[in-house]
Amino acid sequence: MAQHFAARAAPFLIAGPCVVESDQLNLRIGAALAELGAKLAVHVIYKASYDKANRSRLAGARGPGLERGLEALARVRADTGLPILTDVHEATQVSAVAQVADVLQIPAFLCRQTDLLVAAGRGGRPVNVKKGQWMSPEGMAGAVEKVRAGGAPEVAVTERGSFFGYGDLVVDMRSFARLRAACGAPVVYDATHSVQQPGQGPDGASGGLRESIPPLLYAAAAAGADGFFLETHPDPDRAPSDGPTMIPLDRLEGILRVAIDVWCCARAAGTAAARSQGGGRAAVEDRARAVPLARAKK
Image 1 (cartoon, one colour):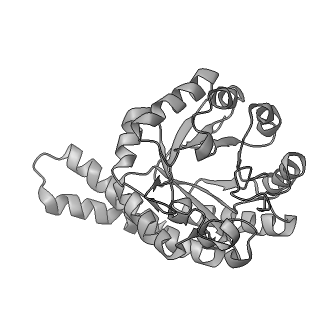
Image 2: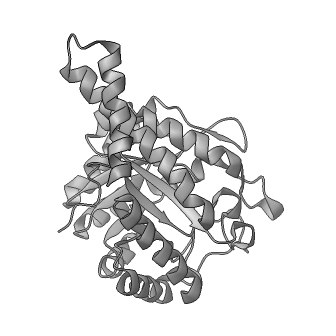
């Protein structure tokens, strides 16, 4: 089985629309992501939810549901060749989802549900667990333990911000190192949900600060995130779910290029500092600058 959470010469990328939509839109985004992954030499995992079971209002858009949603995701996988990630909300869904998805994801609100976490591990697929907005980094060790107890071949943990008062989230950039140390797992930064403003949108839906996505992503790239989670859409303002926190598809490449260069510089500087006792600051900076230049020449 291919590794999905390994950060090698570049961070891995989880990206796609918030929720499964029409085949036309799903495949359009999938094709763009496949092309982007090849262009930037990044491992891309296509993400979309077949059901958003945690909407704040009863009338909130949820998606096509398990059966139709998995069929649509299977078509994306067949058409683009990209691995698929989708949320699982109930332990009884794991078996069906694991037959289609390459990666299972546990939503932040469910990160302490023991039966679900163990069942996800038993699905035989890598599992990405999102950190609850009320959880400390160290508190996520138990969630990872439960998934590993089920036998998951890979586990990652995603930072998506913490509650700050009412209706806002903040990201502590120290959490990436703390999560990695506590959980012994790769750490993902969800740059789109981290700018969410729960309940601040129309009719109680989530609002968000889309303009804050790039600077927070760049900061996380420098702070030690192994992978990025970015929801994207050709027309976010018309998306049925989480539009205020999705990146316009035509802006994704430019934002990613900067984030990857920051990520490479930070990794190169860290490696150089660890290996060099007397090379001095200039040598570290020279080696850091060489990484994005080498990537550009490929």
